[in-house]
Structure formats: structure tokens, C-alpha cells
Image (tube, rainbow, N blue to C red; front, side, top):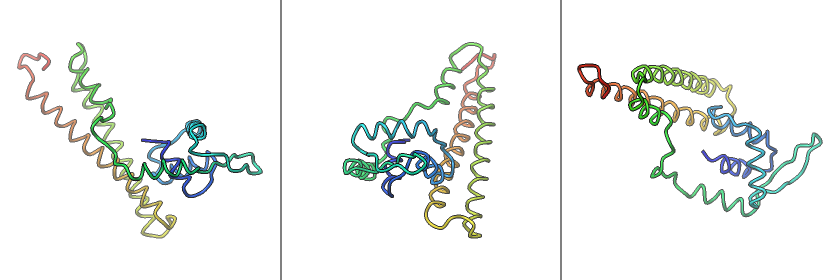
Length: 188
């Protein structure tokens, strides 16, 4: 996820200071990806260095507001206009962990799979409950009007679909291990 581009996109709406950006990002994503406020300010400093944002004003509480520059608007537009590529996927820690568990002596791969399945199902349940609360709030009118709640629901649904896919993949891994297991108990 590009924190840089997320902050630029939020600044398209007008000047904000770091904590406002953090809160807006988390609200738009259903609190699915909490941001560290230090990361926000570090990213703002880099964006300022690169000419994408500039200091706009300081409020009575000492908060420095940042605004987009023309270069920042162009960078944001280029981000909107580009697709998210999948050719070089990020390293998947779980896939790496399982690959190593299969090749390092003394690791119970089935135990690793089961612990991960439990954690993934727990995350799936959490995301599903969050989505249910948001959609219920939309139906009864207690959610803020506008696209923010819909955006948060879509992010949660992305996480739900990813967790469901991970559970299916873990089931596949376990089935493959069972099919390839040596009848004498040797590792596949």
C-alpha cells in the first residue's frame, strides 16, 4: 500500500495536518490499516522534499497544514491513471514460512497450517463483524452520509475475500501434504 499516494489523494480535498490525514485514511479504510502518525509525518516530510506538498498554514494549536503543489496534483493524477500491477507481487510471509517449514527439520508443518488457519478465520470473523456494523449503520442512517462508509465497506470486503482465499489455500496446502506424505511418516 502506498501511504504516499493515499496522503496525496486525501490532500486533494484541501489542506490538512498529519493527524487529520491519519484519521481520514483510517475512516476511509474502515480502520483496516491503522497508520502510525510518525509514518504520516515522515511521509509528509518526503513529499515536501520532493515538491509534492508544501506547508500551507499553522493553526492556533501549532498544527502545520500541508497542501498539494502542482507536482503533487500531477503525481496523484498519475496514480489514479495507473493500474496496480501484479507481475512482481510482494513477498508473502505465509508462503515463505510454509516453504521453509517444509524444508527445515523439526518443524510440524501441519501445526503451522492449523495455527495460521485459526488466526485467519479469526481475522475473517473480525472483518465480517466490522462490515456488518458499517452496513447496519448505513441502513439505519447512523453512518455519516457520503461515500466514506461505502469505501470502508469495500476495503473490508477486500480483506474478507483475501482471508477466504487464504483459508482455501491453507486447505489446499494441507490436502497436498496429505497426498504427498510418505506412508512411513517422512516429510514430503
